[in-house]
Image 1 (cartoon, rainbow, N blue to C red):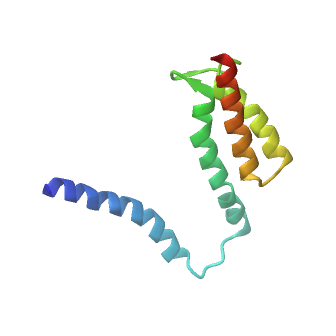
Image 2 (image 1 turned 135 degrees about the vertical axis):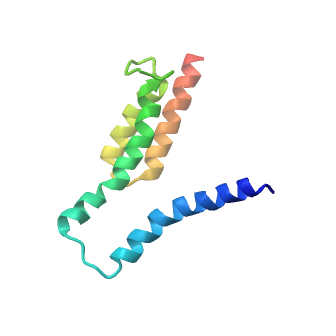
Length: 108
């Protein structure tokens, strides 16, 4: 293997390892302020929303909130099920996948 590739792999390992290890080592055994704990509790939801929303709302790189956008349409009943059955990942996935399958079947 080329030395440049190995160096690149090692650099990527460090780039993913350091942000994980440093907070754990620096904050181990310390009590965080309640405001910071509350703020940190919103990080996973925010990251998930940042990953999902572009796939739901963008078509060919442009904002499309019309009913021609298949995934936007499928997200509406999925969000309703998520709201109704809080914490049920299976229900949300089943409704989302089922809605996409039904729409593709009827539109084909």
